[in-house]
Image 1 (tube, rainbow, N blue to C red):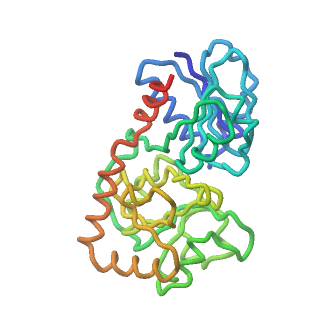
Image 2 (cartoon, rainbow, N blue to C red; image 1 turned 180 degrees about the vertical axis):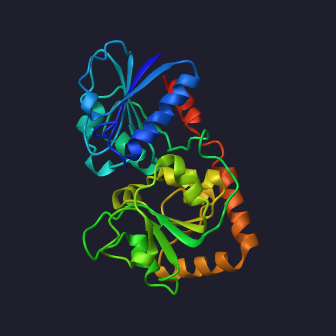
Image 3 (cartoon, helix red, strand yellow; image 1 turned 120 degrees about the vertical axis):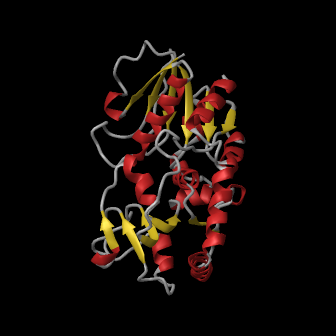
Amino acid sequence: MNIVIKICSPTREEIGWGDTCFADSLAAAFKKLGHRAEVRCYDRWNDDDNAFDTCIFITGLLQYQPRPYHQNLLWCISHPEIRTPRELSAFDRVFIASEAFADTVRKDILVPVHVLQQAYDPTYIYPRERRIEHEILFVGNNYYHHFKYRKIIEDILQTCFAKRFKVIGSGWDDVLPKNQVIAGFVSSDRLPEVYGSAKINLNDHHAAMLKYGFINNRTYDLAALGCLQISDAIAGLDKLGVPVYHTPEELENLLYVFLNDSFHAGRTAKISQMLCKEATFEKRALEILEKL
């Protein structure tokens, strides 16, 4: 098959777009399986693509109009709040990284709908020697403006660990003390090293993804690396062995237990690693091909 993967990243030169890394890993998986695959960002959506027989659109903040000469597939991994039955019905098949949202979509459209969860790329996401430098770490940008926090940061600030966590990402300089913000942007190839520097990684989900049950790919990255994570509560994480919390009090209790019981922390991380082991991009590419 000749596959073009279209994503919502403005250009390949734009940094900080996880969609690009995601699509590159999927393309590499298809190539490993013997297919031709190319990733095109938004600036190249309208380039000549007659040479491809299949188009996979990975959802983001934009909508894509399928071409009649392609077999058109949509993989909804984010922003379910802006997907519409009209948009989804224009594709030949729809893949959704949420069982709950897939059940909802099936009621509204006639095209085949399949559950296809997110994944990790074992070419760079793999266990390695770790150098612990931080107790608690959150890697992510702040969505909001001055004096507002992502929910998981708002929650940890209400615990006794309010001054014991570190953050890497942009948008935090005006809302957190400088000694808690370690760095801004981190390239994807450095993420294993960064995640591995913490005893506990905090994981959260965008409000829309939380509402519609979309487990993010960071969940799989952290699990595959063997890093302990604590996440906000989203359907399906129990099947992946990831500890979740609902209130600041629950978050505080989990942090206290894992920081003071290294055996329990290590065992929990190992269980999650085992349960997520098969969630690779090659496995997802095979799942897509099987449906075709």
